[in-house]
Image (tube, rainbow, N blue to C red; front, side, top):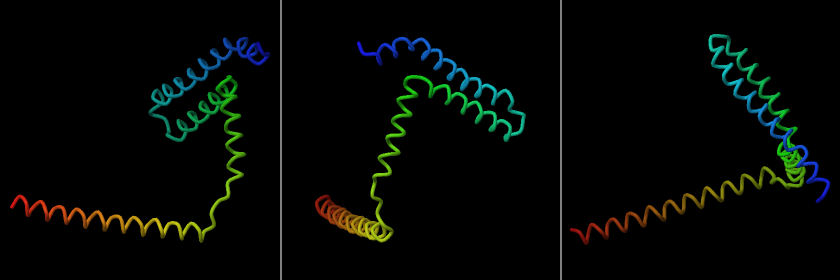
Length: 124
């Protein structure tokens, strides 16, 4: 066994406790929002935001939360590698796609009209 799997096995009970606490905070936030329904919307939103931030912070301490954070950092690195199109390329591509959609629509309309005419000839 590797040391990484040993660390995960040792922290499995802690991981479960952290998830239970995070979920309990979310449930408490939802209940509190309903319970304090008569209070100002601003206060309820700020309370939900605070509870959500604390619950997310706790969830990010779990094994899955840490793996998700690594995934987010990797995605950010990959986004930096993307070569985004220029405005001119975007406009040209949009125009081509629009033209193809219009042409395809006209072709389908023509086929529908032709087939409808043929069916009306057969049916009478």
